[in-house]
Amino acid sequence: MVAYEIFQLVVFPGALFVICLAFLYEWVDRKLFARVQGRYGPLYTGPAGILQPVADFLKLLSKEDIVPRACDANLFFAVPVMYAALPLTALFIMPIAAPEALVSFEGDLIFILFSFGLMTLLIFLAGWSSMSRFSAIGSVRSALQMLSYEIPLGLVLVCPAIAARSLSVSGIVQWQAANATWGAALQPIGLAVVMVCMLAELELVPFDIPEAETEIVAGWRTEFTGRRLALFRMGRDLEIVLVSALVVSLYLGGAQQLWLVPAAAMFVIKTAAVVAVFSFARALFARFRIDQMIAGMWKYLLPIAVAQVVLVQMGLGA
Image 1 (cartoon, rainbow, N blue to C red):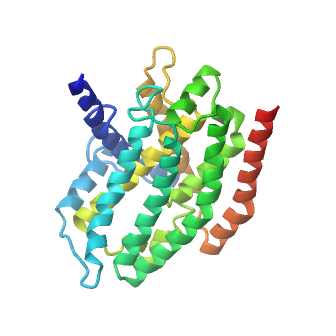
Image 2 (tube, one colour):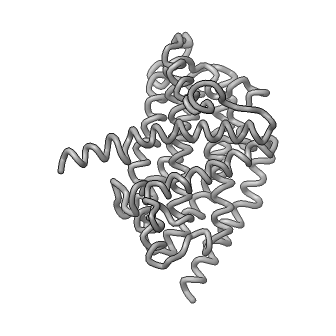
């Protein structure tokens, strides 16, 4: 029994599985993004270039690790490790191979929201600890973006919990199964707001303001090289899996078996569809200015999120 639990935590549906899934989704994202823009994307490493994300990760691990002389060494060394470990930890709360996650408790949805805020804080600390003007600008932009989108994101993500009367992600998935419905059918406005906010959470176009290459080099990641940059990239891929898994769990029925299709396969199909939506969005839109992003979040998304909460409460009252 103990060996099986260790297998679940380490191999499937644990750490190794979600890391492989993270590399796979990076490949899906890059291929779709390239196709929409009339390019090829990864092509030669592995069949159809599927091993290119792994090759890029290994290449970065072998690169020289340069440490700026004026940086805050403790933060500069610690933040990349924490940034990769945090989404990996949070993914244990996501139901992947069954409606019940490996780790589930009442209130784990709040932990996920806390994880998003902490990852943005880590981005700010990463840029600020580099003591680079480009990194500092990127980190300040990240903080502004965080303050703008996390309030409507938090409000809307609580709505499925209100409907299911549970603050557990697994509990919300099971509630959808028991009622033979998806959260997206009941709260389509909430799903739309979540998708926009998640683009900002992942710093994808049109919300890639904190790391705008044409303005501030690589933004908050400018001074990171070698192993640290590899950890940041893997952390971002894991965060994409986490975000997609959360959308699937709260709005698309989660990991549930459909006819002969296993629950884990349904999870992969649904999360891949969410990743595809993100890829099309960042391929089709241009980057917003920082003032446009802030105005859009406060003037439009926040009132919509509050209205969604009110609608859910009225629906429960009826």
